[in-house]
Image (cartoon, rainbow, N blue to C red):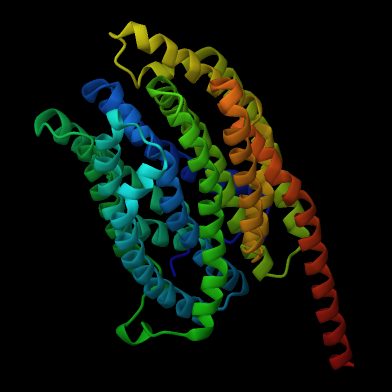
Length: 464
């Protein structure tokens, strides 16, 4: 394996390791979010507020399904990080082969289910008739591209678990540029509706996945599989499903709360939906930091777990909190001074009668979320550490707490306080998740220390 592409995180200063690993990953996520924003800008500017609201109304169902895909891929990579930390490269190859087989199976099943059911789900979500066609046309094509989405996420997560956060970013940058070009081509030249940006997203994801595969097979010798390596290993399948499925379900369970909330927002009308869409897109830009922090924390915890260095786990949490606190200060300053103007990029400002209300609500949404980002820092530091240590199943419970919080806001508060309640849904979910994650973290660490102590005692007795 090329030493230049992998990074051992079991030794060295944790804060420096976090920064070195996070920076390229963060840059890639920001660029990815930038081209997602371009999607939304093009839809809002060229296709109108209804099209923007239609695309925005699919955000929660998109998160439900694509979040599951992302979650299972991240979970599949945990045993890779642990085997790398153990220096068990043969076991690592077995897991890699079975990740490929499992990912192919999930791709087929999820694509069939989502494309067949998405219209019914949109109906259940109370999607307005004035935006229903735009919502369906967009999300249907996104779901058709699930195999491409899983391909990229699977390969990028494997490489990151080995400490290589730079290579996936490079290919993501290429696909991002391609996505922007295809956005403009499909909408402004070919005259397509919202399905144009959806197709652009799917094609660009597929390209980045193919590039990742070619690179990985050439640069990572221990991951270079032969035909005979692609065989089912029941033990590996069980371990991968035990890691991947709970992480996928965590995203999906969390998304259920988002769907309930989105349904409540849909009932408030197009202005509210457009405000959440515009504000949510800007918010997602800031979420890139938290995603990068989570991926870094999980890789750090997984490798050190594999190496048996439990004492470094707490140092990883500290590094996460230090970086997160600095970011929170920067983020809230940017939101207060520039949030309104950034949200305005997503709308055709010639229709002043509706745009003013949309932007005021979007700004309120952003400021409220930004004020509680520090709570989200703690959530990511703890959740991804626990997952990296191999306790993926507990993530479902954290997602359940988030779901309950968002659903409570949607069902009990939005009917009385309208958009004023919507802006507090995310912070409520973050607080609720931490109520579970804080004691869970201490419980997990205590269990691991007891297990390590027992093994050391057994080894000492055998040696004697």
